[in-house]
Length: 317
Image (tube, rainbow, N blue to C red; front, side, top):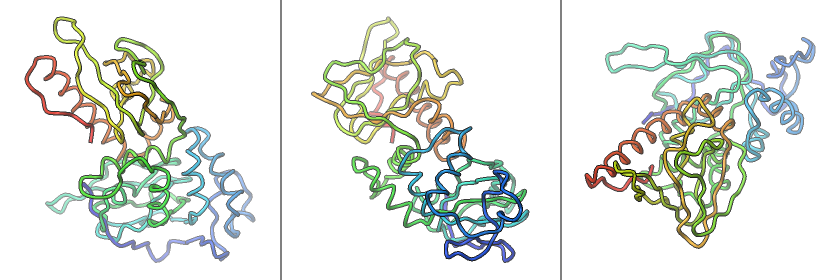
């Protein structure tokens, strides 16, 4: 759980605000000449094209996230400028357009150390927003000059809510659900409707890995006990996910660990393809950490179930 705080951008950080004030534009990265590098904010349609151009190596974002970027503020940070520091108010989500920044963790002993390098395509500052914390617990500082899109917290919250009407994102213990909603918002998705008895994928299959979010309906997770007999491991309900165990393998055609079968009359699913999900895992520490934790819990639960140790229900969140 990360804590957050108020934003203290270094006094010499230059902000390219949407009011039209002249500032360093974030798109010199694309080879725009030096005269165009200092100009007004581009209109949303131009910004959308440039964002897609930047991220062609990282896959397209979901339409909801692209629309959210239309409302973002362009910010330039010089080397040594802070995106935010520990204790600052958590007011924005950040998308790095160019340059590199360092993520700094702070220990109780007072020591600080770098834990990650952020580069073009990296999403940062999301942890505090998803955890609904008010203050930052870590620091991000520009290692080289950086061009960044900065999204206001209120706009982020609104987009998270409208994109995910089927997912509970408020109340106690909702942080996991909020991360799931974040995945659904940032990644391109496609709908899928399953009917009773339909198998989404089968244990041992080598089909292309995908990540699934359940909007409605119910599905069973089926495994095999130590004697090779089929057995029910768990049930997946609306607002939960599956597919992440094989998804975290380097091989997008990794063997499936379980069979997933629809047990309700119908089940409405949101599907994220493996490439897009892998890119988000690489560029969001929050998503990466959650998926690794879920995989460990799922494997432990399956092991306990196979040996009839009475494992408690595992819902993912």
